[in-house]
Image (tube, rainbow, N blue to C red; front, side, top):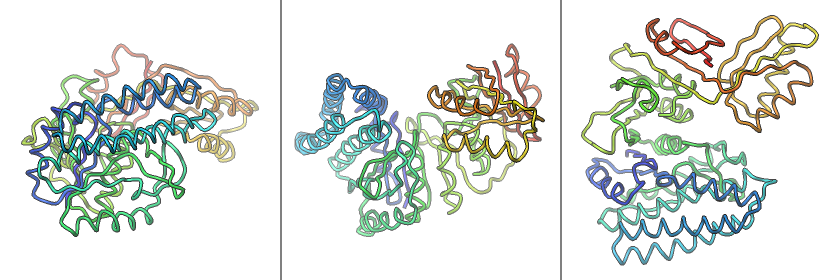
Length: 421
């Protein structure tokens, strides 16, 4: 069994969905197909959640009506009359659920309200996709991931209860596979023990695909993207990028940790632990070789691997009484970051100061500074970028930093990180 994951770009239009049919029809193994919300649906649902929580329920419902029309029009373009009639009836149920979620949305529990609304994007896209495959004579069953992936109640970034999820995956999806059927299921979503919908964090569909493979003894995962494979840098940010033919899990987890967006940070662990290869291939041309990610590769030579995180803030925290930043103060500082669920992207400390580069999320940063200022003096540099280069060369570092002011630089034998203004 193989797991194929298709992101929103691959189904952003009816023409793109239809173009995926040969990829799926020509697969040599049984498939679990993990699908994201189509196009910019998640962004639309986020805006609906925001307006609903802000109290403008009328605007939220108007936006929801537009979203419903978009999905109905999309279905009309890919389905025959019989299957279209079937899915419109199902849509009525799901959009009623969305309307209730909008009515119940409350700013006091924004994350919960967000998840009840935003999770529906994947439900709708997979309903259309699975119905389309069935209309083309392919043997696919639709599964609601909320009945498979069990999580805690950390809304918007839920933690998976692996044991319960694996048992449910084997009971629900494993049963269908044994019957010789293929499966379409959502990425990105799950549910709590109280059946409240949750999301797994942005780009969590990659993680969903990895979980499905690990829980159901898959032999490989393929993430289908609009690029020819894994690049050494984001081609939207850098010129002259090169494709990496093969790369180890270790390198990719390093890239993910430093902020590379091509693979979700949580995706690699279940695959590496179960020795399942991950392929990154292009849905625009299925015959391109793509990239394979696995435990070992034949070549250990890599080009410079470049990651750029924008919208960062560099904080310098200094003790008021000139006490050293040693174990006691570090423990206090780490606790503050941990309790606010703030990931530190780069860290450095000196005798009486502690420096941290973090994502500049306004509300989180306000809370953080407020807590830090109780015991420390806090200075900040806003609107900075964090550049990370694995397997750097002096020439690459010079080219990527020239004309920019360097606030902080850290080097190891293989990695350099630079905070730039």
